[in-house]
Length: 286
Image (cartoon, rainbow, N blue to C red; front, side, top):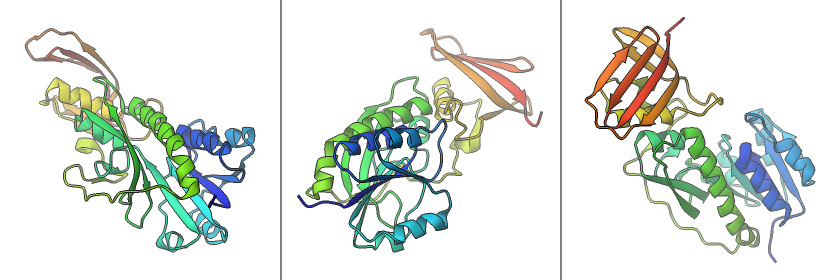
C-alpha cells in the first residue's frame, strides 16, 4: 500500500481527540500538535493513552519551523485548528494537508460557522473535510455530511454535533486517505453565505428589540457557547441604556399572544409568536 511515513494531527477539542483515536487503529506513527489549547483540553492525555507523540507548539514561527523540517511523506490532519498554513508549507511535495470545517462549504467559510448558521436561521448545516490551499476553506471537497439544526439549538450544541459528525466522516474516509486513492471535487465559489472572520459578530453583538421573537431567539443562541467565551456576551439597548445580556431563557408557549415587552431594572420579558424570552441584564460598564 502506498502511504505516509507520518500522520500529524494539529488542532484541539473533541474532533482532534476523536481523529487521534481513529488514526491509532490505522497508523503506527501519529504525532499530535496542540497549537491553541482548548477549554479543558484532553489532547495530551489522549495521546498518552493511544501511544501517540504529543507536542504543544503555540508560537507561529516554531510551528512553521517544525513543518519546514519534515522531510518524509506526511499527512497533516487539521481538526479544530486556527493555524493558517503558509504557502511555503503547502508547496512542499512531501506534505498533504486536509482540514475539518464545521459547515457545508462554500457556505459559512471562516470562523465560528455554527454561529452564522444559527443566526441566519438556516434549517440545515453540516461538515466538510477538504484539501487545504492557500485560500482559506476553499480547497477541493473530500466528504460532506448534513446536519439538521434543531429549533432551539445553541452554537455550542451545534459545534459539538458538527464534531461528532465530522469524526464519523473521518472514520469513513481515513483508509482511502492513507492509501491515497480518494477522490475530491472542486469547491464552487461562495455566492450567498460569505466568509466570516474571527472579529465578525452577528449584528455587532447587539440585539435589536424590534426583531421578531424568532430572530431574537436565533441571535441569542448564535452567541451561546456556554462557559466557553468564544464571542462577547450579547448586548441590548433598552430605554436609551445599553445592557449586557448575562443570561436568557426561551420558552415555546404555543400561544399567539399580542407582542409585548416588559422591562424592569435588570430584567426584560419579550413575548409574541408563541415564544416567551426572559433576559437577565447588567448595565454596560458596571
